[in-house]
Image (cartoon, rainbow over all chains, first blue to last red; front, side, top):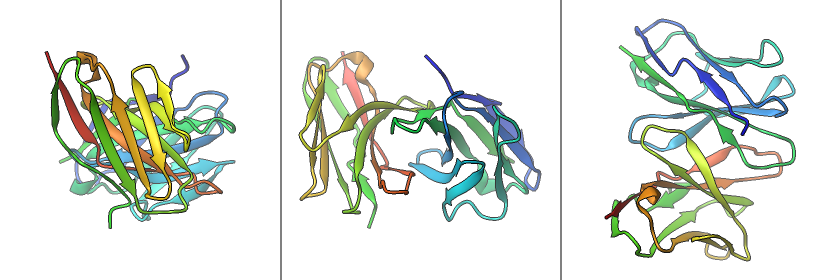
Length: 113
Length: 111
């Protein structure tokens, strides 16, 4: 079964540092997403990406965040200057044009110290 | 008001029992509805979509009441492997692609 792959599985970074979280969506999927889940809280939408541009973003997705699809396979989330409150599990997801079902990656646990 | 509201539980039920979860959503324009399950520290995985006519997948039955903005999930003959957090998820279509998650209901099946 096709998978969404995320790397690294766990990243520890110092407050103020930049981090890049990487995702390889399913190859024929067209829509890409980042969600996050702070420990003990609900899964929250960050951003959706289609046709090489952001199609929607949440209030959480401020100027510190950016996304990029630098080539045909990778989809990255960059946090420019991490804060303690950015500590969370970050999930990448993708879906194809027809099927509304999303496939989530296994997540990157980001710990900001 | 929370967009998608669920009883957080925990629900502790014996193996073989029937358990039901409920969920309400606030946006009447919502068009697509799902139940996901999430194991501890893992990604959400789609359990089933929810249709107005109700739908069944093996031991799982989902119902949607648009008038009441209410979604339910019934698990019959529960197994130990059903222990997880069950997430009620809503999607507003017509260009709004994001999924809105409830906080989840934690279920533990007791042997």
